[in-house]
Each structure stands twice: as C-alpha cells, then as structure tokens.
Image (cartoon, rainbow, N blue to C red; front, side, top):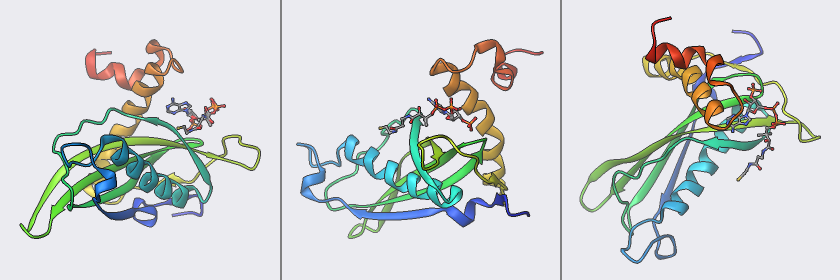
Length: 173
Ligand SMILES: CC(C)(COP(=O)(O)OP(=O)(O)OC[C@H]1O[C@@H](n2cnc3c(N)ncnc32)[C@H](O)[C@@H]1OP(=O)(O)O)[C@@H](O)C(=O)NCCC(=O)NCCS
C-alpha cells in the first residue's frame, strides 16, 4: 500500500448514545431527524479520518426506519468508508439499538452518505483511495460505483446514458 491508499479499518467510527427524553417523539421513540443527525456526525468523522481533511455532506441515500428505537435504549452507529473517488467518498453507516435490561440488540437502519473533502478555499480536493480488506468491504466497494452513478443521475449531475455501470444491471450491453 502506498501513502495515497487507506483501508476502511483506518478510519472506521463507532459512536454510542443513550436515548434521552429530549431526543424522542410523543410515542417515546427516538425522532428520525435526531437519528439522521447522529448518523451525519459519525459518518463525517469517518470521512474526515479517511481524507485527513474538512468535509461537507454532499448527499444521503434513502434511509428507511425499520425498527423504532425507544427511550432509554442505547444507539450504536458504525461508520466505514466504502470507496473514494476523486474528492468524494461514500460512507456506509449501520445503526443498532440495545435494550440493556432485556439483553436485546436489534438492527435499526443503515444508509450511505457521500462526503466531499474541501480545501481552505472551500474547493474539492483529492483524497486517498480505499483498499478494502474483508469480504463485506469488497462487496461494498464493488457496489459503490453503481450507487454513485445512481445518485449523480438523480441529482442531475450525470446523464443517464453515461451511467454504464448502472445500466449494466438492467440491460445486456
Ligand atoms: C458538495 C460540493 C462541495 C460539490 O461542489 P462542486 O463545486 O459542485 O464540485 P464538483 O462538481 O467538482 O464535485 C465535487 C465532487 O462532489 C461530488 N458530488 C457533487 N454533488 C453530489 C451529490 N449530490 N451526490 C454525490 N456526490 C456529489 C461529485 O461527484 C464530485 O465527486 P468526485 O470529485 O469524487 O468526482 C458543493 O456542492 C457544496 O459545497 N455543497 C454544500 C455542502 C453542504 O453544505 N453540506 C451540508 C448541507 S446540510
């Protein structure tokens, strides 16, 4: 590995929070917006570590809240960079909720965030490559190009006919 390459392990983040009354809705469950805030913080720290730089959130892919997280539960957020491009990088974040008295841990949700490293003038700057190591990291790395093309097409930043990786899922070329 050269100086311009890093493994996902080198920048991974684990963040733990206790759900308190101020974080909840009227059903005593963690508010979605509060969870997105925590996910943004954990994944931003991860991408700062990867890029050794200040970063901004460029996009968040769809997030579905499959399981509510209750008042008093412990939320654990795990963020790992999946792939870096030029100045942007994709981070996968996975959230679990733990009920300590019941001894139960459930998967709550997951999402992909994209961050862009910026220089002192606020301009995008180049970042190190990601070198995946585990089977899961390799799978996430492979799928990242397709997800990047999908989000850039949806953001109007890429023409659909240029999204070759994405098209190959639907059509034989
Ligand atoms: C993200 C931002 C830095 C991109 O700046 P830009 O001048 O458009 O720069 P570029 O077109 O050169 O794109 C830079 C990178 O951002 C990526 N990018 C831009 N918009 C994106 C989007 N909607 N989704 C994913 N990636 C995006 C580009 O693909 C490019 O990646 P690459 O360098 O790895 O190829 C700029 O739009 C910005 O500052 N946005 C506001 C960020 C912010 O305030 N976030 C918090 C909001 S709550």
